[in-house]
Structure formats: C-alpha cells, structure tokens
Image 1 (cartoon, rainbow, N blue to C red):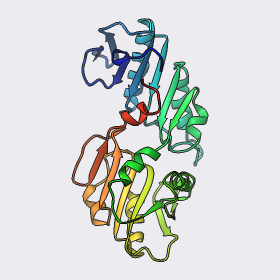
Image 2: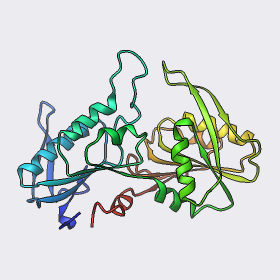
Image 3: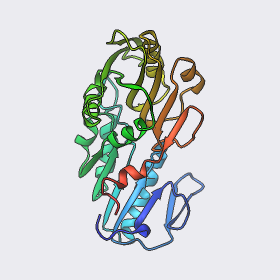
Image 4: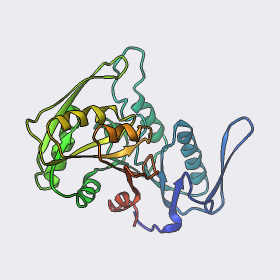
Length: 284
C-alpha cells in the first residue's frame, strides 16, 4: 500500500481509543466518533465478532470516508458466512452472498481474506485478495518433530491440502471423508483412507474449528490406524470446542490464528494473524 504509516492503520475492535470512540445510544444503536483525522489511504483490520460487529464496521467505514479517507484497504481475515456457501435446504438464504454484498457496497480499495472456506467467497467479493494458510502451516510444522503426514479432513479440503503439500515440498497426504445429515449437520460416519499410520505425527489441516466434532471423529479413526500423535491446525478457531473432549479423543495440540479466538491454553496455541497479512504487502 502506498504512503501508509502506523497512523493510517485502524482496528475494529480497537486495541485503544487513540483513533476513534465507540458507544451505543439508549435504543441500542451503535455510534462512532473519530478522534483523529485519517489520511486519504488507510488500512482497516476488522475481526468479525458477530453480526453486530458487521454493522459497526459499516458505520466506522462511513465515518472514515466522511472524514476524508479515499482508499480504505480492508483486512478481513475471517469472512462471515463462508461456510454457508450453498443452499442445502429449501427456505435457506445464501448467507455468504449476503455478507459479500454488504462488503462490496462499501467500495473498499481492496479486501483481503485469510484462508476462506471455499472459492465461493473470493468469487463473490470485489477487489479481493486471498492469503493462503501456507506460511502459517509451514511455521507450525517447523516446530514439530518426527515423521509428519498431512490429513485432509474431508473431500472439500482435498484440493487445498494437496496444494499445501506441494508448497511444503511434497509431504505425504492422507485423505479422509465424512458423511453428514444435511438436515441437522451431524456427522453420520468418518472414513480414513490409509492402512497403517504407526509412528507418524498426523497433522489435520482445515480452515475452521467450531464445536470440533469433525476432528474428534477423525482423531478416533487416525488412532485406530496407529497414529502416534495428532495435531490440528486451523486458520480460524471459534473457541467453542470442549478442549477436554479434544484431548480425550487423541488431539494432542491445536494451532490457530487469532482471527476469531485469542485465548491460549495448554492445548491451544494462538498465532497473531496480522503478520501474515502484512507479509502479503497490504501494509508497508
């Protein structure tokens, strides 16, 4: 980004109140007041924290534009609704398109997303830049030892995991698959396409972990195949999974970014997302 500096970098939610004040009226409406004058070319890092935060992003964007900002580069590491990228049942919305329409209506100079769930998200966004999880995963693997095998948790992840394997120099990949009941999303069965995983560190790589049921069932199957250690690497970790259950079922460590969740624990290791976005050239 040209002519940028630290004072041109905004965050929502803010780490401090140097750039703007945020408050709510009695009726529940959000409001912003800028406390400094923005430059014409700025970068805005937005961490989604529920749908109310989306409205806050739109209000802050409008305030910045009215104060003189012309080119706003949006860093949006977790794109909301990305998993709702198709309509499975009659009467459902195409959620990812609704969120994308809100973002496109702001006419950002660029929109950077980190490891989106599928190709649907970047296809719907204007002036989009996708940052893949490759560098993040490589940094995690650099701290692991032993014989490493990548695990693709389902058919939808195969393309991304095989591409990741090529980036990492051809690490072996084990494919898995899961069958869900489309009515409630519950996993009916999990299958691992490997015969013997004895002595290996199985590294499951995926874009998001919510309740963790996918990875719990997969870890059980990997243990049955002889996996010595199981590591889960996810770009976006909601923090709603029961860590005791993850551990009990064979997951030894979880690595994630702070795109959604920033609480570290004995199980969960959290990495800052901002450096990976900076390394892609959005912030100089």
